[in-house]
Image (tube, rainbow, N blue to C red; front, top):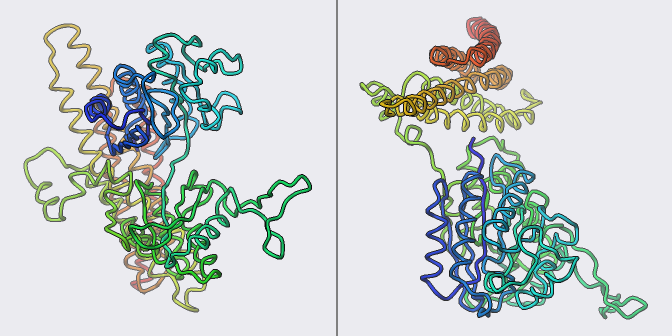
Length: 559
């Protein structure tokens, strides 16, 4: 799975479309970057840009945007309602998929060093990437804004992490840039059936981290011995919330920023808001998503609501997303399109093979096209095995006294769905790897340098074409275990569990074939031997367990 990083740079220009276009064009021109959103604000004189991509591409895209902003924006002439310290004010890196926060911190530091060295812009790091505790908070780093930058640079406590510490004419023009790493921020509104702003504000204050001012039993404001108001902390950390009235909808909303949804998940907070609102005589009528949301947040919410209904949460992603959309009422005020709202779906849909109908896939398979071939079919067999185990797990849930342990099938179904999706991705990955081999063989070989480059490309592509079926094969050790567990479930689905074992064996054997045929093209004998040893070990384990499962199912069905 390719690591995916989100970057959300804020540029100090919200009024000149040509400047905004030039900056976003520079970002989008970087290979591997997907530009998702451009949100200019005239009053704030600020544009928020959202793009995603692989780590290296995102760093290059951010640098291109910073460089273009420094070229076109003069901070000595800038004014706007939003706090700002530079032409590129802030650049956060956000881990989305297959990458850790620590790795995003490293990306922020790498970009900061490059911006300071190549562009001569002072750089401060913030949030997770901060180099000292007092620089974690963006508001603290940005205090004084661009007008106070000269004094900040002269303060030994505020020497930049990278770039010049002198306030030169160039720095007066570019300002400074704050670069960091943070969790994904989800902007979210909860709709209420009231126009009473005080009630909305009270509900928000109870759930948000900042909390609510303490009051005396008679309702008056509580103060400490020094006369200061005292706040009681709210119920959820990493949650910022405010209650307000919107003329547009003629109702109040709780406007929420989830600054770390992994700590305080939206579904937990929404459920609590419903409880608090009910105590205030207020009804939550629906929710509204502002911007993008990670797939994980939607999936976890869907599983939560299915589990509350005592239903097996191990269903497909699309069903989980729909359960979440209904549970939150995301269509109350407008349309909700998962393909537009979920960040992973904005950048990657199913591959061309998986997106085919069953007939189109088999017809293509049966044509004279060299791909898809056996590797893609092996991965599809793995997906079908996992799918069958997920089905049996759901059929084994909540079946009364005959299935006293039916709750144990919840995690089985969830795991099976995850494996199914991984196999489906490899249906297209196997064909893509084969295409890379063909492309490498098609490279020119007229000169010595071209021959060397071609040979290296062929070896790299061959290694990839070996690794795809090898991971398919090794994953099948997990999927045969699921088939074994499914065979202890609903006896009326015993044949389905048996077929899950059979197609798991077909997956493993087919993937092993594809590993072996690709190993013939690898010149590195040590790597080849290591791959072969891993493949042999995985195939032996799957074959033994598949044979035992088949014997059990035959005996039970034939008995």
